[in-house]
Length: 216
Ligand SMILES: [Zn+2]
Ligand SMILES: [Zn+2]
Image (tube, rainbow, N blue to C red; front, side, top):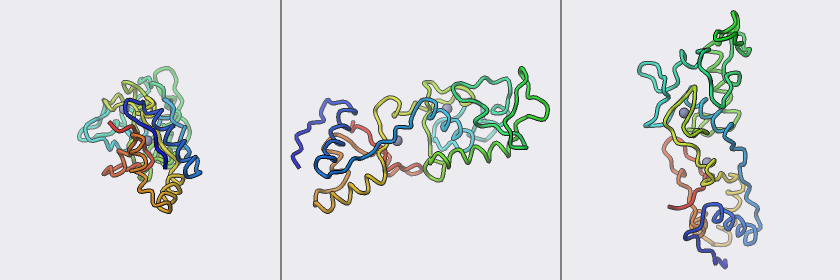
């Protein structure tokens, strides 16, 4: 391939575009990008992750139960807490699986959130959204800093800062086989030509083979 691109000093977006353009012109494949990452999306699935799992090693929500690392139920279900960006109606469920109803600073009688029903619902949020590791993979915050009801110290998603992209997994598989057929080396060697890499490829708990960033 006639690779004339020099990634040195070029921002992530330029590197990614050059890579995608070359994949198209050299291997006739349009590699799709996951574009569903907005601040609201990111914060919703981050809060859900911190409520159920928190697989971050060194960061915790501001209110945890004794000995736990996830958002305390007493805080998650506290009607006085004003949630930032995320809506409690997207997470909390009553025992009858309805949305809880607030009356002033209290829950309406018969419409209080129920822990079991809420946990079940939030679990399904993560799997339906296609979060990795059967819904348990880490999700970065959408806010800087993270807000209620989590308020942890986790960094904001690199996706939102324009320094990371998720590429379509099956397109990458196709591209890999085309590289192999052309004896053109590995996908990672190809990415490296454009100053790109996959830093989460071998992550111990949340591997993401589709996650691309600029090489430092
Ligand atoms: Zn957080
Ligand atoms: Zn990613």
